[in-house]
Image 1 (cartoon, rainbow, N blue to C red):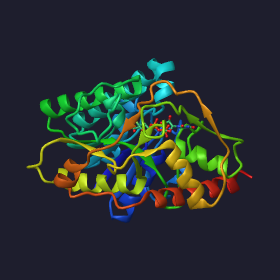
Image 2 (cartoon, rainbow, N blue to C red):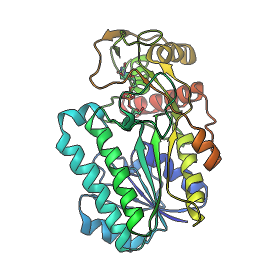
Image 3 (spheres, rainbow, N blue to C red):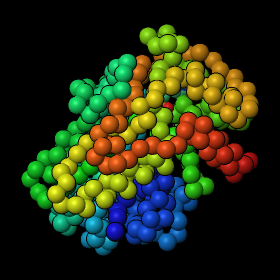
Length: 326
Ligand code: UFG
């Protein structure tokens, strides 16, 4: 299939591109390279250095590649920053999203897979969340994801567009010799590994007074390759015109606390970590775990990689990054 991947030079997007190519798809990437890395992508893909906020340029890319389906990753992702710079998040994530849909409509592209987020659930709860749980984002990043889910749904109602929206829980790990490379890095696992690799003096635990078993936040960490595999299933699903648009959680159902991750990293990579307890990071829910019954029943998808594999692969990537930088 011919697939256009927006944000394909980013962390999850670039893993998706590699997996699509491995499965025989033809791929074009649309990315403004503000946060993406061109070097994460194989040479053979078609590349559009395009900003989705520019409708005319987005339409041009769509007309030139004429994809059968679009996978939409491109967006700003830092929840904390989204509370300091809401305009940037609303402008980039929402305007980018509607321009993409409009360009698809104009060029008669009828399938889209959208990267939504567990951030749409806001506070979370002490058991796995279902897709039917209330939508109540606690930051403007989550609000942009929840809003774009609704906008896509309107496009699907009004035009001949069908979609799958995936609410990702915590993507982590690495594959294909590439990995997570955010500037600045805000995610737990890469930050802990950088500290273990002496690229940072300390790692910080943001709050140990949450109402959880050890006082630190619980998250559901899923290997980036498992996430991407679900997109392959979604492409198959959308190929059957009888299948309706749907929203699915993507996680593992298993929650791990920040302290448990820290201990597991020490054990898995055999290094020590300098940890400091810091105050809570604003907007962090105590619990976020995914109920994945729906994706497993309707898409026949299940995550396969363990947390140890997440850590081992992310550690290999951290070492590669460190040696590239020295
Ligand atoms: N944390 C620390 N120290 C750090 C970084 C993070 O203690 O240096 C804690 C956070 O407070 C949180 C947990 O580790 O409790 C995970 O934090 P991340 O920043 O790695 O991930 P988030 O859960 O905040 O957010 C991620 C994605 C979001 C997505 C969310 C869904 O970045 O886009 O998962 O679960 F919405």
